[in-house]
Image (cartoon, rainbow, N blue to C red; front, side, top):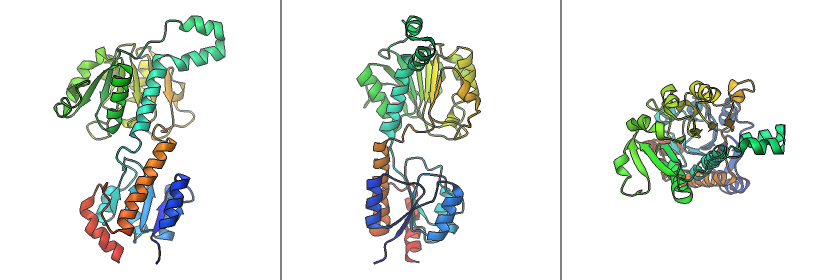
Length: 336
């Protein structure tokens, strides 16, 4: 019996790749560029795909046998969702697959910034042990009892709030769309509406956006937010770069109106070596790696394997499909 063809846009966990090869005819694109993915899709005409990178808008035409796209992660902004749905291609994702990893990254950056670790390391290296010790004695602050404002209450925010509140005794407030829905179950947290977040900023010492990108959240953390935060505050963002006004953040850091910031995402998706963000003081930048731990890599890969097994080997709609209404069309594509 011929095995269904699977195309991955990038390599997976080695053990997961072995499992894919046992069940499917498994291929990996030459590289993660749209051009290479398009070439591989047209040449192989896969029935399934494991997607970690941007797909061409014409993927449905390039691969007429394509039935199911399994997103190796939670966000589907790398997939032309409408075009695929219109063509009858089912799309699944991994909800919360890297939530713990991103939450731990946020926690690590919060602790690092509050304890002034990037500044201390640089001063120790450039100015010497004694000068750095004298300069930073009394400069660090504890996280315990500090006021943290988290925007959103999805999987990442839920893990992070538990770590902060239960493990480290921070005072955590959640700003979300439906605060009343969570209050009873999460008594240790304070919940407010998103419209109340701006008023909470003058007392906020740690601000963490954990919100999806949408028309209502793009540019949400704007100049007025940075103006409202106290100078002792820090900002940590691992959600989407577009939710935060980078220019306003950098201005606040340069002028000393913000104690520090850490970002794993940028509005431009990646940063050139000459970007002014690299020169901004007290700003830690990582290249969108917060959720790319070995453990998250394995969880996401296994979820994709299970989803494609459901669809292509068992003829079942994958349980984490974002467009289950197209499954009858997907089955028809499979039969043809």
